[in-house]
Amino acid sequence: MARTFRPTCAEIRLSAVRNNLNKLRAAAAPARLLFVVKANAYGHGAVELARLAESGGLAWGFGVSCVEEGLALREAGIKSPVLVLGSLYPFESFVEAINAGMIVTIASLDAARQVIEASRRAGKKAECHIKLETGMGRIGARKPAVLKIYDELSASGAVSAAGLYTHFSSADTDPEYTRRQLAIFRETAAELEQRGARLLLHAANSCAAMGYPEARLDLVRCGIAAYGLAEGFEPAMELKTRVVFVKNVREGAFISYNKTFRADRPMTVATLPAGYGDGYLRRFSNRADVLIGGRRCRVLGNVTMDMTMADVTAVRDVSVGSEAVLLGRQGGEEITAAELADIAGTITYEIVTLITARVPRVYTP
Image 1: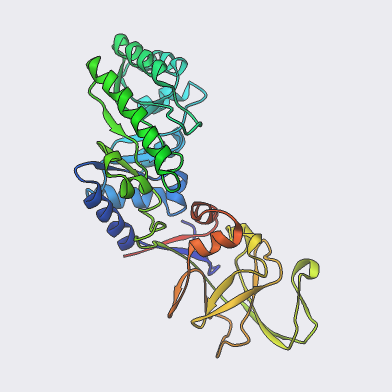
Image 2: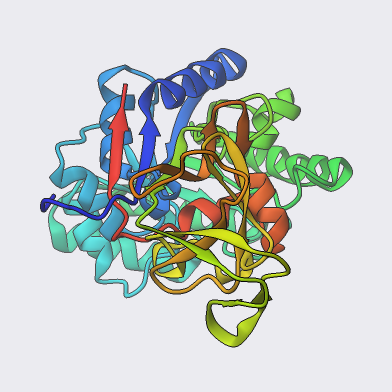
C-alpha cells in the first residue's frame, strides 16, 4: 500500500476474527465453516482474513460474490475451496472461474448448459453447487428444475455437482418461515440422494448456525458473526482518526453546510478528517457521537465528504492530534455498529461494508 499521512484508518483485530471463527467452529461441529469474505470481507479485508483463516485451519473454504473476488484470493495464494455465491453473467466468466479452480453456483438450467460448454472449452472439469430457491426470492431454481439440473450436469461428464444450498431470508425474525424453507431443502436433498447424488449440503448463515442446530448440515456459511457484528461475538473493526483542528465558537455560530447546527452557547469544536467519502454516513449529521478523550462528543452540523465536526467543550486537554473513535471503544465508552445502524435506519452490514477503499485497513494481533 502507498504511504499514507492522513490519520483516518480502520483497525482490524485479527485475534477477534480468530476467536469468532473458533467459536463458530465449536458451535457448528461437525459441520465445517464456509467463511464468507465477499464485499472485501464486509469491509474488513478479504485477502488478509482469508490468509488468517487458511493458515490457521479455521475454515473449509471461502464464499465470494463474483469471479473477480475469487480471482483476488487466488492471486494472493489462497488454495482452499472458493465458492462464487452469485449467479454468473456473462457466461464467459465461467471459463475464468473454472481455470482458477473456483466452485460456481448453478441456479438455472440455462446456467447448467453454459457451465457444461465452458468446462469443455476450458478442457477442465468444473465443480459447482446448485442453488435451490426455497423462499428467499433472489436467485435459485425450484425443486423440479434442480432435479433436471442435476441430471443434466451428471449426464454431461464435464461438471461435478458437488453441493446443494439455499439461503434463509428471515432466520433472525421468522422461525416458522425458516423451518419451512429448511423442510423444502431437506425434501429436495432426499430426492437427489435417491438419484445417487452425494452432495455437500448447506443452508445456515451466521444467525441460523447459532439458532437452528438442525440447519447446520455439512457446511455453515459464516459472515456477520465472524466479524463480531452478531450478539455474543467480538467486534473486529474500529474506525479511528485524529483531531486536525480545534476552534472556539461564539453563541449563534453556524457549523457546516446548510446551517443545520447553530451553537446555543460558546463551544469548543474539533474537526476530524473523515466524512461520507470514507463511508461515515451523512445520516450521522447532528445525531451520532464520536469518542474523544474517553467521552461521547456529538457530531455537529452536516457530515461533509472529507471532514466531520464534533462538540469537545466538555473534553479536557483536547488538541490537534487527539485520537477520535468513530466506531469502536475508547476508555469506558463504545460506539457500536448497531448504534450507528439505528441512527442511519439500516443494518450493521451496511455500516462496515460502506467504509471506502481510501481508508487504510491496519491489522493488529
